Image 1 (cartoon, rainbow, N blue to C red):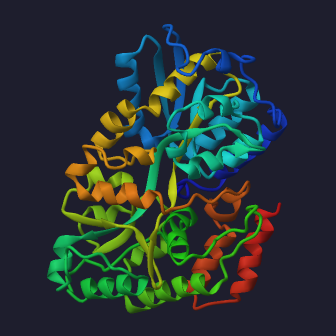
Image 2 (image 1 turned 60 degrees about the vertical axis):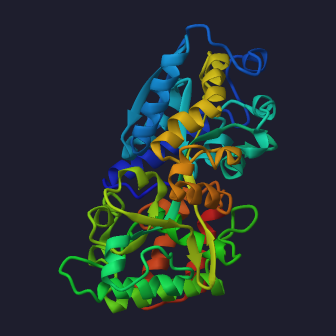
Length: 431
Protein backbone atom coordinates (compact mmCIF):
# COMPACT_ATOMS: atom_id res chain seq x y z
CA UNK A 1 0.00 0.00 0.00
CA UNK A 2 1.11 3.57 -0.62
CA UNK A 3 -0.22 6.31 1.61
CA UNK A 4 -0.35 9.88 0.46
CA UNK A 5 2.95 11.61 1.26
CA UNK A 6 2.99 14.01 4.17
CA UNK A 7 5.17 16.47 2.27
CA UNK A 8 3.26 17.56 -0.76
CA UNK A 9 3.58 20.06 -3.58
CA UNK A 10 7.10 20.20 -4.94
CA UNK A 11 8.17 16.85 -3.46
CA UNK A 12 5.30 15.00 -5.10
CA UNK A 13 5.78 16.79 -8.39
CA UNK A 14 9.46 15.96 -8.35
CA UNK A 15 8.66 12.30 -7.80
CA UNK A 16 6.08 12.28 -10.55
CA UNK A 17 8.45 14.02 -12.94
CA UNK A 18 11.20 11.55 -12.15
CA UNK A 19 8.85 8.65 -12.75
CA UNK A 20 7.83 10.09 -16.10
CA UNK A 21 11.44 10.66 -17.10
CA UNK A 22 12.09 6.97 -16.63
CA UNK A 23 9.94 6.31 -19.66
CA UNK A 24 12.54 7.96 -21.83
CA UNK A 25 15.52 6.58 -19.96
CA UNK A 26 14.53 2.92 -19.71
CA UNK A 27 13.91 0.83 -22.78
CA UNK A 28 10.37 -0.51 -22.60
CA UNK A 29 10.37 -4.28 -22.89
CA UNK A 30 14.17 -4.46 -22.55
CA UNK A 31 14.93 -6.43 -19.43
CA UNK A 32 18.58 -5.34 -19.45
CA UNK A 33 20.93 -7.14 -17.09
CA UNK A 34 23.74 -9.51 -17.85
CA UNK A 35 22.53 -11.44 -20.88
CA UNK A 36 21.29 -14.78 -19.66
CA UNK A 37 23.12 -14.88 -16.31
CA UNK A 38 19.83 -15.44 -14.51
CA UNK A 39 19.10 -18.63 -16.44
CA UNK A 40 22.73 -19.79 -16.39
CA UNK A 41 22.93 -19.40 -12.61
CA UNK A 42 20.65 -22.40 -12.11
CA UNK A 43 17.60 -22.78 -9.87
CA UNK A 44 19.37 -21.58 -6.73
CA UNK A 45 21.43 -18.77 -8.25
CA UNK A 46 25.03 -18.03 -7.34
CA UNK A 47 26.35 -17.71 -3.81
CA UNK A 48 29.96 -16.80 -4.53
CA UNK A 49 30.71 -14.05 -2.04
CA UNK A 50 29.43 -11.17 -4.16
CA UNK A 51 28.27 -7.88 -2.69
CA UNK A 52 24.70 -6.97 -3.62
CA UNK A 53 22.71 -3.78 -3.12
CA UNK A 54 19.02 -3.60 -2.20
CA UNK A 55 16.68 -0.63 -1.78
CA UNK A 56 13.40 -0.61 0.10
CA UNK A 57 10.88 1.94 1.39
CA UNK A 58 10.95 2.99 5.03
CA UNK A 59 7.55 1.43 5.91
CA UNK A 60 9.11 -2.01 5.38
CA UNK A 61 12.36 -1.28 7.20
CA UNK A 62 11.74 -3.72 10.05
CA UNK A 63 11.00 -6.69 7.81
CA UNK A 64 13.73 -5.81 5.31
CA UNK A 65 16.39 -5.64 8.03
CA UNK A 66 15.35 -8.99 9.48
CA UNK A 67 15.48 -10.64 6.05
CA UNK A 68 18.82 -9.14 5.05
CA UNK A 69 20.42 -9.99 8.40
CA UNK A 70 19.24 -13.61 8.13
CA UNK A 71 20.48 -13.94 4.55
CA UNK A 72 23.85 -12.39 5.28
CA UNK A 73 24.35 -14.68 8.26
CA UNK A 74 23.79 -17.82 6.19
CA UNK A 75 25.31 -16.99 2.78
CA UNK A 76 28.65 -16.06 1.28
CA UNK A 77 26.95 -13.26 -0.67
CA UNK A 78 26.31 -10.12 1.35
CA UNK A 79 23.44 -7.69 0.78
CA UNK A 80 23.82 -4.00 1.63
CA UNK A 81 20.39 -2.57 2.47
CA UNK A 82 19.41 1.04 1.83
CA UNK A 83 16.17 2.23 3.44
CA UNK A 84 14.67 5.25 1.66
CA UNK A 85 12.02 7.58 3.14
CA UNK A 86 8.64 6.76 1.62
CA UNK A 87 8.20 10.31 0.31
CA UNK A 88 11.52 10.13 -1.57
CA UNK A 89 11.33 6.65 -3.06
CA UNK A 90 9.70 7.30 -6.42
CA UNK A 91 12.04 10.20 -7.16
CA UNK A 92 15.11 8.19 -6.12
CA UNK A 93 14.16 5.21 -8.30
CA UNK A 94 13.36 7.51 -11.21
CA UNK A 95 16.67 9.33 -11.00
CA UNK A 96 18.66 6.09 -10.68
CA UNK A 97 16.84 4.47 -13.59
CA UNK A 98 17.59 7.47 -15.78
CA UNK A 99 21.30 7.34 -14.95
CA UNK A 100 21.67 3.56 -15.13
CA UNK A 101 22.48 3.28 -11.44
CA UNK A 102 19.67 1.21 -9.95
CA UNK A 103 20.73 -1.25 -7.21
CA UNK A 104 20.94 -4.99 -7.91
CA UNK A 105 17.59 -5.53 -6.19
CA UNK A 106 14.84 -3.09 -5.35
CA UNK A 107 11.43 -3.38 -3.81
CA UNK A 108 8.44 -1.44 -5.08
CA UNK A 109 5.00 -0.70 -3.72
CA UNK A 110 2.90 -3.26 -5.55
CA UNK A 111 0.69 -0.58 -7.11
CA UNK A 112 3.78 0.93 -8.80
CA UNK A 113 5.03 -2.42 -10.10
CA UNK A 114 2.94 -2.59 -13.32
CA UNK A 115 4.17 0.86 -14.38
CA UNK A 116 7.81 0.18 -13.58
CA UNK A 117 7.66 -3.23 -15.27
CA UNK A 118 6.23 -1.57 -18.40
CA UNK A 119 9.15 0.87 -18.33
CA UNK A 120 11.68 -1.98 -18.28
CA UNK A 121 13.09 -1.38 -14.80
CA UNK A 122 13.07 -5.07 -13.82
CA UNK A 123 14.71 -8.07 -15.47
CA UNK A 124 12.63 -11.03 -16.64
CA UNK A 125 12.49 -13.69 -13.91
CA UNK A 126 9.99 -15.93 -15.68
CA UNK A 127 12.19 -19.00 -16.20
CA UNK A 128 13.44 -18.83 -12.63
CA UNK A 129 10.01 -18.39 -11.08
CA UNK A 130 8.53 -21.16 -13.22
CA UNK A 131 11.30 -23.43 -11.97
CA UNK A 132 10.21 -23.10 -8.33
CA UNK A 133 8.65 -26.30 -7.02
CA UNK A 134 6.10 -24.23 -5.08
CA UNK A 135 5.34 -21.64 -7.79
CA UNK A 136 1.59 -22.29 -7.64
CA UNK A 137 1.51 -21.28 -3.97
CA UNK A 138 3.25 -17.90 -4.44
CA UNK A 139 0.85 -14.99 -3.92
CA UNK A 140 -0.94 -14.57 -7.22
CA UNK A 141 -1.74 -10.88 -6.79
CA UNK A 142 1.91 -9.89 -6.59
CA UNK A 143 2.89 -12.17 -9.46
CA UNK A 144 0.10 -10.72 -11.62
CA UNK A 145 1.18 -7.15 -10.88
CA UNK A 146 4.68 -7.96 -12.13
CA UNK A 147 3.65 -9.87 -15.24
CA UNK A 148 3.71 -8.23 -18.66
CA UNK A 149 3.21 -10.04 -21.96
CA UNK A 150 3.40 -13.33 -20.08
CA UNK A 151 6.81 -12.53 -18.57
CA UNK A 152 7.19 -12.44 -14.78
CA UNK A 153 9.40 -9.76 -13.24
CA UNK A 154 8.83 -9.66 -9.47
CA UNK A 155 8.24 -11.85 -6.45
CA UNK A 156 6.52 -10.78 -3.22
CA UNK A 157 8.90 -9.04 -0.82
CA UNK A 158 6.63 -8.27 2.14
CA UNK A 159 2.85 -8.62 2.02
CA UNK A 160 0.73 -6.04 3.79
CA UNK A 161 -2.94 -6.88 4.05
CA UNK A 162 -5.78 -4.65 5.15
CA UNK A 163 -7.74 -6.36 7.93
CA UNK A 164 -10.50 -5.56 10.39
CA UNK A 165 -8.96 -5.00 13.83
CA UNK A 166 -10.97 -4.35 16.99
CA UNK A 167 -9.98 -3.35 20.51
CA UNK A 168 -11.35 -6.09 22.76
CA UNK A 169 -11.28 -3.94 25.88
CA UNK A 170 -13.41 -1.24 24.28
CA UNK A 171 -15.77 -3.88 22.87
CA UNK A 172 -16.36 -5.22 26.39
CA UNK A 173 -17.01 -1.73 27.72
CA UNK A 174 -19.52 -1.16 24.91
CA UNK A 175 -21.37 -4.38 25.69
CA UNK A 176 -20.15 -6.10 22.52
CA UNK A 177 -18.80 -9.65 22.26
CA UNK A 178 -15.02 -9.17 22.22
CA UNK A 179 -14.48 -12.51 20.49
CA UNK A 180 -16.86 -11.95 17.60
CA UNK A 181 -16.00 -9.94 14.49
CA UNK A 182 -18.65 -7.80 12.81
CA UNK A 183 -19.79 -10.01 9.93
CA UNK A 184 -21.14 -7.23 7.69
CA UNK A 185 -20.37 -3.59 7.07
CA UNK A 186 -23.67 -2.75 8.78
CA UNK A 187 -22.54 -4.64 11.89
CA UNK A 188 -19.24 -2.78 11.71
CA UNK A 189 -21.13 0.52 11.81
CA UNK A 190 -23.31 -0.67 14.70
CA UNK A 191 -20.20 -1.65 16.68
CA UNK A 192 -18.54 1.71 15.99
CA UNK A 193 -21.61 3.55 17.26
CA UNK A 194 -21.73 1.35 20.37
CA UNK A 195 -18.12 2.21 21.23
CA UNK A 196 -18.87 5.87 20.61
CA UNK A 197 -21.78 5.63 23.02
CA UNK A 198 -19.39 4.79 25.87
CA UNK A 199 -18.96 8.54 26.00
CA UNK A 200 -15.35 8.61 27.12
CA UNK A 201 -13.42 11.74 26.18
CA UNK A 202 -11.01 11.08 23.32
CA UNK A 203 -12.41 7.64 22.45
CA UNK A 204 -14.11 7.14 19.09
CA UNK A 205 -15.89 4.31 17.36
CA UNK A 206 -13.71 4.17 14.26
CA UNK A 207 -11.16 6.07 12.20
CA UNK A 208 -9.81 6.22 8.67
CA UNK A 209 -7.86 8.51 6.35
CA UNK A 210 -10.41 10.61 4.50
CA UNK A 211 -7.74 12.73 2.83
CA UNK A 212 -5.53 9.76 1.94
CA UNK A 213 -6.43 8.07 -1.32
CA UNK A 214 -4.07 5.16 -0.74
CA UNK A 215 -5.48 4.51 2.73
CA UNK A 216 -9.02 4.48 1.34
CA UNK A 217 -8.22 2.17 -1.57
CA UNK A 218 -6.39 -0.16 0.81
CA UNK A 219 -9.31 -0.38 3.22
CA UNK A 220 -12.50 0.26 1.22
CA UNK A 221 -11.88 -1.73 -1.96
CA UNK A 222 -12.07 -5.00 0.05
CA UNK A 223 -15.66 -4.25 1.10
CA UNK A 224 -16.57 -4.19 -2.59
CA UNK A 225 -14.61 -7.36 -3.36
CA UNK A 226 -16.18 -9.14 -0.38
CA UNK A 227 -19.56 -8.66 -2.04
CA UNK A 228 -18.30 -10.04 -5.35
CA UNK A 229 -17.89 -6.62 -6.96
CA UNK A 230 -15.01 -5.13 -8.92
CA UNK A 231 -13.25 -1.79 -8.61
CA UNK A 232 -11.54 -1.79 -12.02
CA UNK A 233 -12.33 -3.13 -15.44
CA UNK A 234 -10.31 -6.15 -16.60
CA UNK A 235 -7.63 -4.10 -18.35
CA UNK A 236 -7.20 -1.59 -15.52
CA UNK A 237 -8.32 1.40 -17.59
CA UNK A 238 -11.89 1.80 -16.36
CA UNK A 239 -13.29 2.49 -12.90
CA UNK A 240 -16.21 0.48 -11.50
CA UNK A 241 -16.65 2.59 -8.38
CA UNK A 242 -20.15 3.89 -9.02
CA UNK A 243 -21.93 0.54 -8.68
CA UNK A 244 -24.57 -0.44 -6.13
CA UNK A 245 -22.10 -2.13 -3.77
CA UNK A 246 -19.73 0.82 -3.83
CA UNK A 247 -22.61 3.18 -3.08
CA UNK A 248 -23.56 1.08 -0.04
CA UNK A 249 -20.00 1.44 1.23
CA UNK A 250 -20.06 5.23 0.81
CA UNK A 251 -23.49 5.51 2.46
CA UNK A 252 -22.35 3.48 5.46
CA UNK A 253 -19.34 5.71 6.01
CA UNK A 254 -21.36 8.89 5.40
CA UNK A 255 -23.78 7.77 8.13
CA UNK A 256 -20.89 7.00 10.49
CA UNK A 257 -19.44 10.45 9.85
CA UNK A 258 -22.75 12.22 10.46
CA UNK A 259 -23.30 10.23 13.66
CA UNK A 260 -20.00 11.43 15.11
CA UNK A 261 -18.58 7.91 15.44
CA UNK A 262 -15.53 8.68 13.26
CA UNK A 263 -12.42 10.26 14.75
CA UNK A 264 -12.80 13.94 13.69
CA UNK A 265 -9.19 14.27 12.52
CA UNK A 266 -9.92 11.55 9.93
CA UNK A 267 -11.34 14.27 7.67
CA UNK A 268 -7.93 15.84 7.13
CA UNK A 269 -5.76 12.74 7.61
CA UNK A 270 -3.31 12.45 4.69
CA UNK A 271 -1.72 9.19 5.78
CA UNK A 272 1.24 9.57 8.16
CA UNK A 273 -0.82 9.15 11.34
CA UNK A 274 -3.93 7.39 10.08
CA UNK A 275 -3.48 4.36 12.39
CA UNK A 276 -2.11 6.24 15.43
CA UNK A 277 -5.33 6.63 17.42
CA UNK A 278 -6.14 2.92 17.19
CA UNK A 279 -2.60 1.98 18.23
CA UNK A 280 -3.01 4.28 21.25
CA UNK A 281 -6.18 2.44 22.30
CA UNK A 282 -8.52 5.33 21.47
CA UNK A 283 -10.53 3.72 18.63
CA UNK A 284 -12.89 0.77 18.87
CA UNK A 285 -12.38 -0.81 15.48
CA UNK A 286 -10.94 0.06 12.11
CA UNK A 287 -9.57 -1.37 8.90
CA UNK A 288 -5.87 -1.64 9.68
CA UNK A 289 -2.57 -2.94 8.18
CA UNK A 290 -1.82 -6.53 9.17
CA UNK A 291 1.90 -5.70 9.41
CA UNK A 292 1.14 -3.71 12.57
CA UNK A 293 -0.19 -6.73 14.47
CA UNK A 294 3.14 -7.43 16.17
CA UNK A 295 3.44 -3.82 17.38
CA UNK A 296 -0.14 -3.29 18.60
CA UNK A 297 0.26 -3.15 22.39
CA UNK A 298 -3.10 -4.56 23.55
CA UNK A 299 -5.49 -7.42 22.87
CA UNK A 300 -7.06 -7.12 19.43
CA UNK A 301 -9.32 -9.27 17.32
CA UNK A 302 -8.55 -9.73 13.64
CA UNK A 303 -10.81 -10.63 10.72
CA UNK A 304 -11.19 -10.02 7.01
CA UNK A 305 -12.87 -6.82 5.86
CA UNK A 306 -16.60 -7.45 5.39
CA UNK A 307 -18.84 -6.36 2.56
CA UNK A 308 -22.20 -4.61 3.04
CA UNK A 309 -23.98 -7.96 3.42
CA UNK A 310 -21.12 -10.21 4.50
CA UNK A 311 -18.17 -12.00 2.99
CA UNK A 312 -14.55 -11.10 3.63
CA UNK A 313 -11.67 -9.79 1.58
CA UNK A 314 -8.44 -7.81 1.78
CA UNK A 315 -6.22 -5.57 -0.30
CA UNK A 316 -3.06 -7.59 -0.86
CA UNK A 317 -0.61 -4.72 -0.72
CA UNK A 318 2.97 -4.42 0.35
CA UNK A 319 5.96 -4.54 -1.96
CA UNK A 320 7.17 -6.74 -4.78
CA UNK A 321 10.88 -7.18 -5.43
CA UNK A 322 12.94 -7.90 -8.50
CA UNK A 323 16.35 -7.69 -10.12
CA UNK A 324 16.94 -4.27 -11.64
CA UNK A 325 17.75 -3.66 -15.29
CA UNK A 326 21.13 -2.27 -14.23
CA UNK A 327 22.37 -5.24 -12.20
CA UNK A 328 25.37 -7.17 -13.48
CA UNK A 329 25.03 -9.68 -10.66
CA UNK A 330 21.64 -11.10 -11.51
CA UNK A 331 22.63 -14.69 -10.77
CA UNK A 332 23.65 -13.67 -7.27
CA UNK A 333 20.54 -11.50 -6.91
CA UNK A 334 18.41 -14.51 -7.81
CA UNK A 335 20.13 -16.44 -5.01
CA UNK A 336 18.68 -13.87 -2.59
CA UNK A 337 15.23 -14.03 -4.17
CA UNK A 338 15.23 -17.83 -4.22
CA UNK A 339 16.12 -17.83 -0.51
CA UNK A 340 13.49 -15.14 0.18
CA UNK A 341 10.78 -17.52 -1.01
CA UNK A 342 12.17 -20.46 0.97
CA UNK A 343 10.53 -21.91 4.07
CA UNK A 344 13.50 -20.66 6.08
CA UNK A 345 12.83 -17.02 5.16
CA UNK A 346 9.06 -17.15 5.02
CA UNK A 347 8.53 -19.01 8.30
CA UNK A 348 11.64 -18.51 10.42
CA UNK A 349 11.97 -14.81 9.60
CA UNK A 350 8.60 -13.38 8.52
CA UNK A 351 6.12 -15.65 10.29
CA UNK A 352 8.25 -15.60 13.43
CA UNK A 353 7.87 -11.79 13.35
CA UNK A 354 4.05 -12.17 12.97
CA UNK A 355 4.17 -11.11 9.33
CA UNK A 356 2.17 -12.62 6.49
CA UNK A 357 3.86 -15.33 4.44
CA UNK A 358 3.87 -15.04 0.64
CA UNK A 359 3.24 -18.75 0.06
CA UNK A 360 -0.18 -20.25 0.70
CA UNK A 361 1.34 -23.68 1.42
CA UNK A 362 3.08 -22.16 4.46
CA UNK A 363 0.03 -20.33 5.82
CA UNK A 364 -0.56 -22.70 8.74
CA UNK A 365 3.02 -22.66 9.95
CA UNK A 366 4.22 -23.31 13.50
CA UNK A 367 4.26 -19.64 14.47
CA UNK A 368 0.82 -18.96 13.02
CA UNK A 369 -0.49 -22.00 14.89
CA UNK A 370 0.42 -20.27 18.17
CA UNK A 371 -1.71 -17.26 17.29
CA UNK A 372 -5.05 -17.95 15.54
CA UNK A 373 -5.07 -14.34 14.33
CA UNK A 374 -2.09 -15.07 12.09
CA UNK A 375 -3.88 -18.06 10.59
CA UNK A 376 -6.83 -15.77 9.89
CA UNK A 377 -4.60 -13.20 8.17
CA UNK A 378 -2.91 -15.86 6.05
CA UNK A 379 -6.25 -17.41 5.08
CA UNK A 380 -7.83 -14.08 4.14
CA UNK A 381 -4.81 -13.32 1.94
CA UNK A 382 -6.10 -15.95 -0.47
CA UNK A 383 -9.47 -14.18 -0.69
CA UNK A 384 -8.04 -10.76 -1.47
CA UNK A 385 -7.00 -8.93 -4.58
CA UNK A 386 -4.31 -6.61 -5.89
CA UNK A 387 -5.64 -4.07 -8.41
CA UNK A 388 -3.43 -3.73 -11.48
CA UNK A 389 -3.43 -0.44 -13.40
CA UNK A 390 -0.58 1.47 -15.04
CA UNK A 391 -1.94 4.79 -13.75
CA UNK A 392 -3.01 3.64 -10.29
CA UNK A 393 -0.90 6.27 -8.55
CA UNK A 394 -2.45 9.20 -10.40
CA UNK A 395 -6.00 7.85 -10.20
CA UNK A 396 -6.02 6.81 -6.54
CA UNK A 397 -2.96 7.65 -4.43
CA UNK A 398 -1.95 11.13 -5.53
CA UNK A 399 -3.03 14.17 -3.49
CA UNK A 400 -6.25 15.47 -5.01
CA UNK A 401 -6.83 12.27 -7.01
CA UNK A 402 -10.28 11.77 -8.56
CA UNK A 403 -10.83 8.79 -6.24
CA UNK A 404 -10.22 11.02 -3.25
CA UNK A 405 -12.60 13.60 -4.67
CA UNK A 406 -15.27 10.93 -5.09
CA UNK A 407 -14.98 9.69 -1.50
CA UNK A 408 -14.89 13.14 0.04
CA UNK A 409 -17.85 14.18 -2.05
CA UNK A 410 -19.91 11.13 -1.11
CA UNK A 411 -18.96 10.96 2.58
CA UNK A 412 -18.11 14.46 3.76
CA UNK A 413 -20.01 16.68 1.35
CA UNK A 414 -23.32 14.91 1.07
CA UNK A 415 -23.13 13.31 -2.34
CA UNK A 416 -22.56 14.72 -5.80
CA UNK A 417 -22.81 13.10 -9.23
CA UNK A 418 -21.21 9.73 -8.50
CA UNK A 419 -21.20 8.63 -12.14
CA UNK A 420 -19.39 11.81 -13.17
CA UNK A 421 -16.89 11.32 -10.33
CA UNK A 422 -16.33 7.72 -11.42
CA UNK A 423 -15.82 8.81 -15.04
CA UNK A 424 -13.11 11.21 -13.87
CA UNK A 425 -11.23 8.25 -12.38
CA UNK A 426 -11.59 6.39 -15.67
CA UNK A 427 -10.25 9.39 -17.57
CA UNK A 428 -7.03 9.24 -15.54
CA UNK A 429 -6.74 5.46 -15.84
CA UNK A 430 -7.04 5.75 -19.64
CA UNK A 431 -4.22 8.29 -20.03
